[in-house]
Structures are given as structure tokens and as C-alpha cells.
Amino acid sequence: MKYDRTFNFSAGPAMMPEPVLEEIRDEMMNYKGSGMCVMEMSHRSKVFIDIAAEAEKDLRELMGIPDNYKVLFVQGGGTLQFAMVPINLLKNGVACYVETGSWSKKAIAEAKKYGEVKIVASSADKNFNYIPDCSDLDIPENADYVYICENETINGTTYHQLPNTKGHILVSDQSSMFLSRPCNVSDYGLIWAGVQKNVGPAGMSVVIVREDLIRDDLDPKTPIYLKYKTHADADSMYNTPNCWAIYCCGKVFKYLKSLGGLSKMAEINEHKAKILYDYLETSKLFTSAVDPKDRSVMNVTFVTPSKELDAEFVKASVAAGFDNLKGHKSVGGLRASIYNAMPEEGVVALVEFLKKFEAEHK
Ligand SMILES: *Cc1c(COP(=O)(O)O)cnc(C)c1O
Image 1: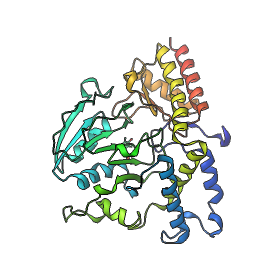
Image 2 (image 1 turned 180 degrees about the horizontal axis):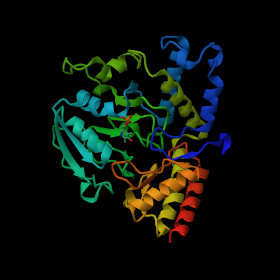
Image 3 (image 1 turned 60 degrees about the vertical axis):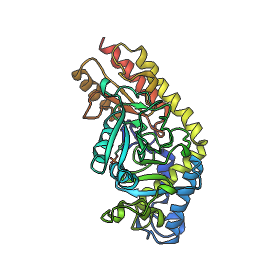
Image 4 (image 1 turned 30 degrees about the horizontal axis):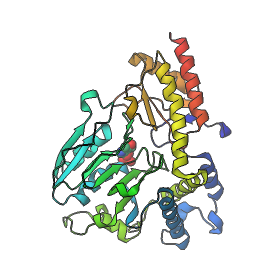
């Protein structure tokens, strides 16, 4: 690999596309004749306002975001959205959540502080290794929204079909699948994604929200920074935004467009994931616990027959130039995160390594 970089299978912060890193390097000392690095720029300067506006424009084109949706760049990472969603969207005080794993559980715990949470479907019975049937959910008439985590990063599952919300607003945490495949934005009331999984550096979330859901009649004690309206009214520049993340994400949006957009990304990602899953299906040492119909294309989770062997594998993989294959500390096992920026050769090399390890541990 160029620059002697490792194949980094981290779930986030994760790999960035090399051509993007090279462009950032080339612009580091003097961004397009401005005489400064983007890190040093005033967020009120024309040069930075143009960077942010162009990032939004490119994202809108990439996802086909309708005009009646706002795009917000909000600091605080994904975890802040677990609170911002109920704070901003609860009107009747009732929300429905689908419980599919670690990240939806965190969202549920946070929402319970602000209203009544109804868990309308759950895969807790099988250790979250599948996505429950969401075609006929029991949704109360007064529910303000239905919430899903569209790709469970830790458990390795994804929705291949959206829930039937029976006319209620759908809210989705797309953090670990954002921009990995086409998305019909008008199916949702709100989509949010922490960018450090599949887009850019940590410290920011993108929120895509239908305009009529942005309200001003919230509890007067709501911190100003936690209202979507604050960010929407100020074009995400109410205060100093995460300028660096906006700049880097903008580069990635352009790069994905140059590759052919999201249908092309879906094709590339499915191909990469198939290489890994095909091997796991034939392997006698490594197994995936996830129901094949709900397997994530981004986060591939698997195990050996024992914790000891898992640990031995992790050690051997690091020595062989593969990084971050250890599963999340809460569930153990192994995980390969293969986001947009992971090249196919990284996945092929990993499969070769898995085969070699298997041959040595018969
Ligand atoms: C990582 C992640 C989060 C939390 O993101 P932070 O920025 O670390 O707060 C939330 N949801 C999903 C699906 C994630 O993968």
C-alpha cells in the first residue's frame, strides 16, 4: 500500500479515501490562495462560508435531498442526537423505538428521560443477531415518531427494508451506513449520522430534517444549542462550527460523486462484503451469528470457537498489518468494518489472512 499505511478495519474513526487525504495535504499550508489553512480560517469569512455551502450542495446532490429538508452540521457526535431527537420531536410525549442492539438501546435510554418510549419490536431474544419484522407494528395513534438505528455497528445488522410506520414520522440513525447506498430521503422525517464512521473526522453529525418538524415551541429551558431551529436558522453557523470536519466531509462528498454516486457505492460495498461473507460461510473456524438476510454490508461481525482464539487472532492480525479487527468491548468477538473508504484489496487481503489462520488452527 502507498505510504506504508495499514488496512484499518476500525468501526470509527475509520479510514478516509486516500485521494481525499492527499488533497487535504496539498491544501494544508495555503488553501486555494487564501494564505491560510482551513483550520485557521474565520467561519465568517467568505472563503469558509463557500466551503460549507459547497459541502451542503454536494451532499444534497449525492442523496437527492428534497428542498423541504434542511441539512444541519451539528457538533457533539452521535450521542448528542440521542437527546436532540426526543427534545425536538416529542410533542405528544410518546415515541416508538425498534430495539436492535447497542446503539438503539442507548437511544432508548436517552429518550426515556423526555417522554414515554414504546418498544414496538425487538431482537433482544436472539442477542440482536437479526432485524425484527417491522411490517405491522403496533404504533399508538399519538406517537410522535418511530425510531430505528438503520445499521447496528456493534452487532453487525442492517435493515434491507424500512419499517411500515403507518403514516408516522420515521427517524433513522444512519451513522454507520451513511452514504453507503442510495437513500430515499422523503421516506424519513429525520436522518442523522455521526460522520466519523463513513465520512470524515470525528466531532460532528449531519442532520437531515424535514422543515415542518423544526419547531420553536419547545420547553423554554431547552439549551439553545440543542434546538434544531437554532442550527437551521443560522445555516449551521450559530456559533463556531466544526470547520475542519465540514471541510473534510465536503471533500468526501465530492469524491463519492466522482466515483459515480450512491448506487455505485452500493455496488462496490456489496461486492466487498460478499467476498468476506462468502468466505465466512465456508469457513469451519470463523462463523457469523447474524441472520444472513439482515447482515450489515459495513460492519461484518464474526467469531472463532473461543475467546482465547479470538484474542490470538487479533494479535496475529496486527502483526500481519491489519488493524482494529477486535469486536466491540461490550460483545467481544471479531469485527471488520469495511466502509466506503476500505479498498477491495484490503478485504481480499483479509480473507487471505483468515484462510491462512484457519489452515494453521485446524
Ligand atoms: C458510533 C455510533 C454512534 C455514536 O457516535 P458518537 O459520535 O461516538 O457519539 C451512534 N450510533 C451509531 C449507529 C454509531 O455507530
